[in-house]
Length: 250
Picture 1: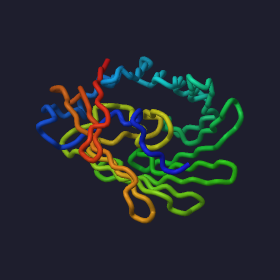
Picture 2 (picture 1 turned 180 degrees about the vertical axis):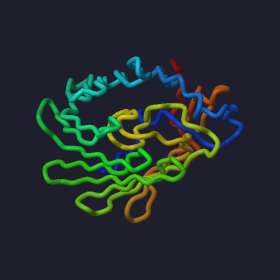
Picture 3 (picture 1 turned 120 degrees about the vertical axis):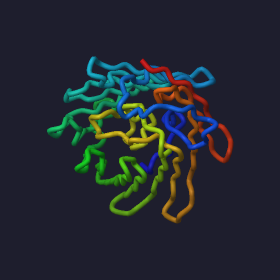
Picture 4 (picture 1 turned 135 degrees about the vertical axis):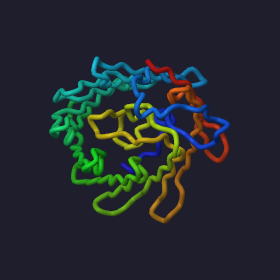
């Protein structure tokens, strides 16, 4: 699997530095008490999130799929595709002393498909992900700067295949405790079980091929409330708006 081009359904979060399009907000690092419950696109498409009493994600519902999470359970996640009725399961979860996932096995229709291993750095951020699938070995190397994920390098059988670069808005803090956009490229929305989230909101996202060509480039523009929670977001590429979303926090 190549470094996944971030889909619009996985492009639901983070920002840019155009001050005219961002309302002032407080330092949300000390005010993160709400979580996103619903994200609605202009075309009516919506995404819903349900949490347990500890703030851990239990259900993520989208137009084409439903994710059922079981925090702390050996069987971490079941993914059901609505149209095809296919089922993917992530089982045999192994955790470290901080309850972060270190290893998972992925099943398709209860048939083993791949093994996924996770490594974290001393600051609690995901630093490496390794996927083993019938002899094919993928490695994703994560690089951080000032508490933000700024680069993901993908290797297939030790050969670099692609790179993803992220830039952040310096003074806008990430008020979402989960990776709604799957920037880590794990394949589903992740929470603290997969390490810390980036401190700031993303301003731009770019994929670079091994020959230095840009595969895609997205820019993110946000409006926030006075506490820094995202109220709405626009995704643009080449100065063209792709999607607009509104956020509802619980």
